Length: 341
Figure 1: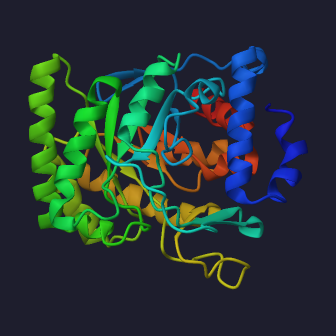
Figure 2: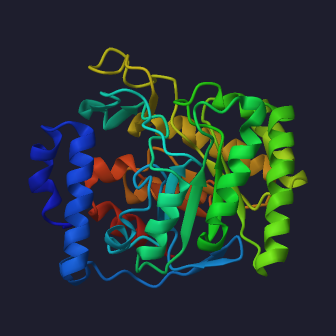
């Protein structure tokens, strides 16, 4: 898989991005089921790290969005990730935004997507997790349904939290996707404070019930002002959040202006996102001052990029768009880069 991806990439890039996405994941599932993927997986150095009280085999994870329904965990686990984050999942199934809704910008190694939390709902998600053989660290990214009013958003997050609690190593609260109308308004200080107070109270009740405290992470946007990031950092500490994830996709078009598909509505990911994601990471790390760990995501396209995020204060990194342009070899490259002293 690692060596073959560059050969197949031109064919995949000739197809619709969502179709290519499904083809690759189904192929990976087949390779895992037959044992081919495990046989071909590269040997990675042992580089365990403890974050959020969890023992990660290495610092490189899969970002949310690639496996929205947790339907491909076993195949993805063969690529060498230290952890997987699946979702975003909502309480009820929803189709997402109309197609086409994903666009490649190859000259910039970027993608614009306006998928809109397309997923099969939390019941199917949980069934997929229960069916999977994967027993590594699994993050579950949760969101609200598109037709749930913002004033009722907490109900959706609580419903999803209850459903996935027993199956998640940690749970990520997604309030930063640009593709669900109004969702980013939940990042405003008062709204976020109320939302997190409700969710953490439910988490504490679930921890008492199940005898296991599942860490909570919150994923933020790269389009916040520095002052907003600092205010959010203080809020995370007050609300006893266990980790922050920086960042989601951007609504800015830095580095792609004038290129085909750059004007499409949606969130931009890939190499052009890197400067914004890195700047947000640095502001967040400085504001938190070690109070809780930060997971870095957004524009990580090489091992050097991964090293830069760790040097900027991240505890872990996550990949998505880099996988589309570089293929599975990027996982091993980043894991090896971060295992070096």
